[in-house]
Length: 173
Image (tube, rainbow, N blue to C red; front, side, top):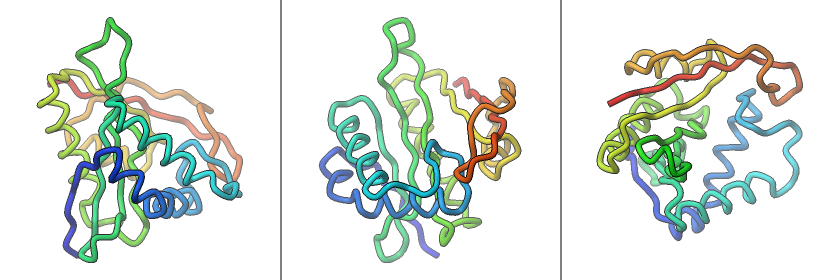
């Protein structure tokens, strides 16, 4: 499968809310603990992505997408740059989402590498993220050199209710 990684501006993100919502819905229905619970309320994924698009338009974040050979979005990742005054060198990595139809093809790695390149261009020297402990995503982060900062037990809930641990990672350039 041919995959293209793109950074979307706010208008592009807003125009593609339905595709982005489809990726989020698929991930949550597949068990990903990414801030949403099952059953997903009607319109909830779309509302989330409209808010993200507004953040992109306001310059508070950068949104990367992975498109398949048809141009359809199958993965996302955000670089959140809206930080407190004492952290201009830092950014958060948020919502690594890869649709089940595009997994195990290097999509997550390619999204992360594109995000890291953009972070460097923006002068960011420290990136921070969290993910479910032991998840597929954690293996990607570790393989790409991210440093484990620690685990927090019972940090969040899985979409169907049970608690899960999260691991914080950082990357310094």
